[in-house]
Amino acid sequence: MRIDSLELGKSFKVKSIKDKEKPILRKLSAMGLREGASGQVLLKNGRVILLRLNGSRLIIDKEIAGFIEVA
Image 1: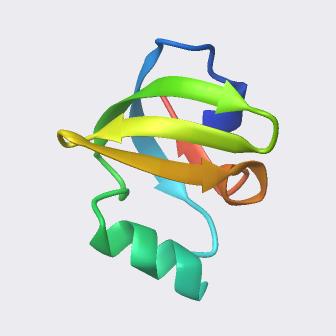
Image 2: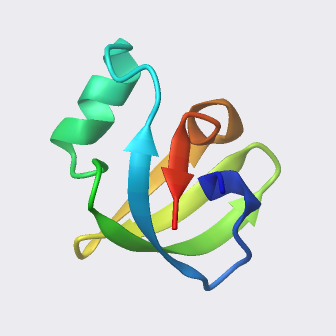
C-alpha cells in the first residue's frame, strides 16, 4: 500500500522506497524517511501530506508519496 492511500491518523511503517536515487528521495532519507521508519499521517490537503516522523513533522506531495510503500 502506498503512503498516500492511508487515512488520517493512521500509523505506518515504511516497507520500501522505489527509485531511491532520486535527489528528493535521498534528501527525505537523510531526514529520516527511510525503510523501517515509523510514522503517522497527520493531514492530507490537496496535493500534500503531513507526516509525523521521529518526533518531527514532514510534508511530502502526492507525487513523492507514490514512491513510498508502507505496511
